[in-house]
Image 1 (spheres, one colour):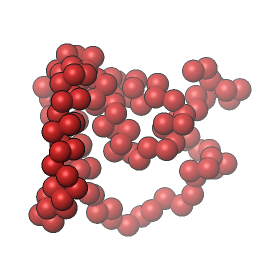
Image 2 (cartoon, helix red, strand yellow):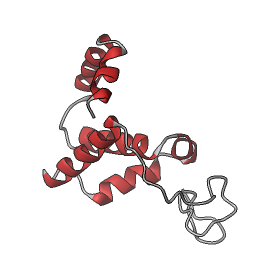
Image 3 (cartoon, helix red, strand yellow):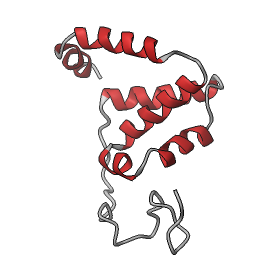
Length: 119
């Protein structure tokens, strides 16, 4: 991904008021969903365990492509980056991930409702 005429890459939105995502910065508190809190905790724990660094997180975020970057939420991008880094470090395999995802999917949609109530 090459820089544009200003020397910025597509993900560098700093000071770009013309960007479609630009707008007022919300100054209210954000009530984080349970899954967002868990993603934040996983990122911190993986960093403490040496699974990856902030540079590794940023590398994946910057390489995911403009469409993915602009259609995913902040914590969806973090999950994607954390997952990619953990796969690269051999923490688990794609097959392991697929099997675990199938287990979670088999729980149905009520599981998340039950855990969010206690957040």
